[in-house]
Length: 307
Picture 1 (tube, rainbow, N blue to C red):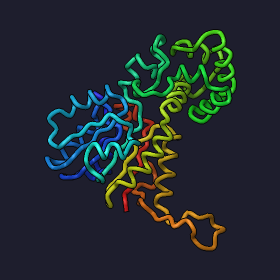
Picture 2: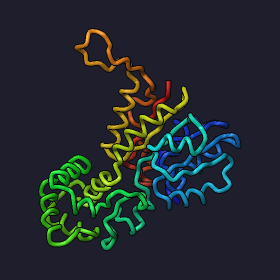
Picture 3: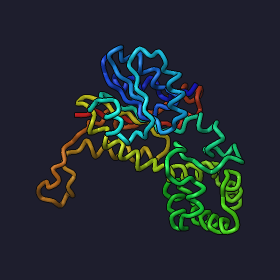
Picture 4: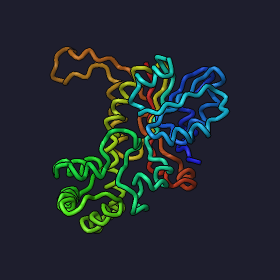
């Protein structure tokens, strides 16, 4: 069973109540959704979204017999209009986005999400039916400068240039198709990395790039905010600084009125505040939660309310 990170804080932040419509935009195996559903009552609606069809299947099992109405949708959480149309609604009362990589993805050796499976294909797509390039195809065709950008921007790797050059040289001899083949190149190129196993950051960078995770996050925040009822909450759990920065900046900018440059004598943007930031600082797991579930240690939760 997937452990739902910051579960008590999520439930409190969403202010779940009977009759509400709550969206779990990254339903996964249904950890948070199973806690939310009983609070919505028979008239409430829980919408669970996931890009991974196998996660939808797991959530169906977990939510079987839930006391609220449940609608599970196999889409990306930024496909807001399509989701709302499928559920025959126009507004929601709350949105949860738990951006973490699920344990099921790490334990599944078929997509290359974990470097534990050396023979796994270098795919990294959350939805393997989606017509987007795999990580192996991206490495095979991307110019060196694009590889550098991905590794530097999404993995924050100090050796981004050296790794990109090594991959370009290696692919001339043979395609880099498996996790093990990539790891061998990384091991020879990046030495004495003090903070992480560098493969963690390399796979993170490729996964973010392949799935357009940061772009989807920005679009998802914008679109769900538009369809959030006044007083509704949007709650986001992020696990690295790239995601958290996007959420923090979006909430802050959406809580502002005029966003014109200070040199403008009068407002020209006509920008109106849409959100009220509930937490000025991110909410983090307690020492007890981290002790019980070490994978929660990097979680950061932020909350905003529609005004």
